[in-house]
Amino acid sequence: MNITLVQPCIGRKADGGYIRSWCMEPLAIGILSALTPPGIGRVFHDDRLEPIPYDRPTDLVGISVETYTARRAYQIADRYRAAGVPVVLGGFHPTLCPDEAAAHADAVVVGSAEPVWQTVLDDAAQGRLQPRYLAPPGNHWQSPPPDRRIFAGRRYAGLTLVETSRGCPHACDFCSIAAVYRRHFAARPVPEVLAELEALPRRNIFFVDDNFGADRHRLRELLQGIVDRQLGLRWFSQTSLAVADDEEILRLMRRSGCVGVLVGFESLDPENLRRMAKHPNRSEEYAERLVRLRRHGIAVYGTFVFGYGQDNEDSFRQTLAFAIRHRLLFGAFNHLVPFPGTPVYQRLLAEDRLLQPAWWLSPDYRFGDVAFRPRAVSAERLAQLCYTYRQRFYSPLNILRRGMDFKANCRSLAQAAVFFAYNFLSRCEVRHRQQLPLGVDE
Image 1: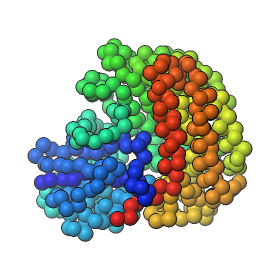
Image 2 (image 1 turned 180 degrees about the vertical axis):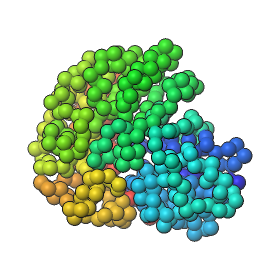
Image 3 (image 1 turned 90 degrees about the horizontal axis):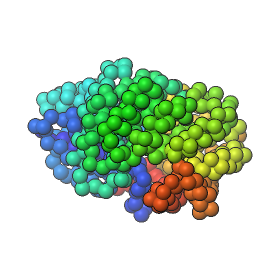
């Protein structure tokens, strides 16, 4: 049997280009390849980087789907199925919307692929695919290191992605991760992670864990292992700002090669944080925690969400001033996205505030559009404010101001070169991303 694995793009503008910073190794595809027995042939097509050769013979197609890629994934699936090739859809979006995905697939994987992928392959080989494969609930997760050979020949961003845990113990109301994992947290054994890190040819690592600092004891063990083995990493991850309360962890982060972390501040407004159920965040402690991170040379990529409560342009002004004052490495000024399956989606649906219930399938929806009716401003105004303040954060003057941070952002000439290169790249991509369509007209 021969299988084809596909990573769909979000969509393309008329010029055909794609957002460079979004072109990282698709880790889910590498894991599926690693789970596939050696006797099965496999090929991989990355729709973000190359045309898909639909006429290439194959016995089964597997597509990993997120909400923003759902429309494009369904286009690809429909084309294969029209040619008589069975299709399996999996990932976050089919897990949250299995009935919708089933209209474009012969089989849908709900939950993690690891427990069921072998069964999917066995059933496909015997021509008896089941409509749905349900991963068992809970926090038991075993996964091999991804088969990175399948990425060969493609120009991905210069970071190697490594997953050490899945899920998050928190339940923020806008978070699709919380909707999928339901507060379950599962982690790979630390020796297994260290062995994978030792085998990697590149030292620039992005730990893609949903909350890298969720288990403090395990984090200490992992970081100490990196230090003891002298792996020489330069790494980045996403975590709660609460890690800044532990000086021992901060020292280990720095010694193990941490150059920065992505932190979801989400809002400076305590009432908004309460509405989000963002309980770990206390806006009155942001400044002190950021000082601690900078003291250890750790830069911060800050993300913010607008559209709750009375968010208006004053909210944006205050947030921009905060981001510049604290010299954030990068910043994301995002509007609230009502992902299916989340509490905020259900609330907006019940309040009749969704502009389109399945906005991700609309041919008129564009990246940057707001899919609901905010209370304080119009949807169009909120979208414009996000775009405007992204541009202001990445203005040449504000890039220079943030680059004057010699403790974290620009500790050396090499790091300064990376800081300015990627900030100016981000400045260009703000415009490139805006109004990106979902799906591709072929």
